[in-house]
Length: 364
Image (tube, rainbow, N blue to C red; front, side, top):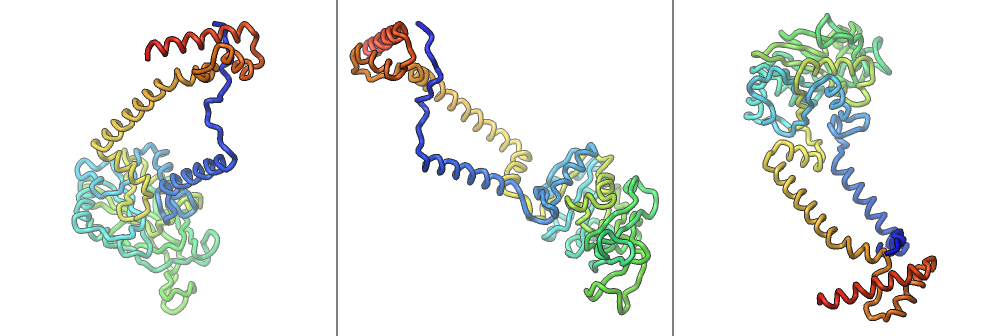
């Protein structure tokens, strides 16, 4: 048969302008819904890419060569051979239960590193006490009228000595943070001697408030593990990572660990789509089920495509004519449909249509 043009796409549905607008609107709504279900606007959120989110924290940990996991359940804390894992808790919004605190304490005692970053909520101190740490967050805002980034509520702190966590770090910038009452813990980073704790909330030094250098990051051994207290979770957010040497400091916290667990089990900031993906990743059964469903859908689609392909090819070549047309009618139809065809082409295609019609009739 003489080759004919297959560029005709008349089998595609023709849509009116209102239908096209409705289709475009529906597509935009679906994109918006998927985006909303996979992102978060919560402060310190792992899926929040805005200035106050911690979406960049995963990249910092990954760049340090660490295998990063966003944790939504305390059961993800390893309780044996945990010395290669660092867990990061950013200002938990809810208290940990007794069983959850026990699990995290076992993680630390078995060699894990726990980083707790808190400023004003009470749950950070409760977690420190539960794992046996001596450090506590003060809870009053710290100001520094001489050493600051933009104003006194962004005090600059400096390393207290040479430690792995402060390697390459000259300045850490806080954002309305507090301080740490170190107890027997080692101070890693502290404020300048011009810092003060604002007890009455007027952002001024007065009354019994005193200038002094105070710890903002401490480290201590608990069992076979370590607990690091950071007095400002804002250090870990996207915007503050670019202030001072905050990024380098955060990178140092997770470096030299095989795995980093970002604990969002009590943060209420994991969007539903991300939570579903994380649940599937944690469950072999759910992962297998999703695989079976996906393979089944692909097979069903492939079968449907297989059935419709011959029909679409016939239509695209002009074979989809009225079965009741005579030979002359088929020729007239083809001339109208393909005015650029030569007479020989019209004749050959007409013969093919008539032949296919006869074959279908015999099969019927």
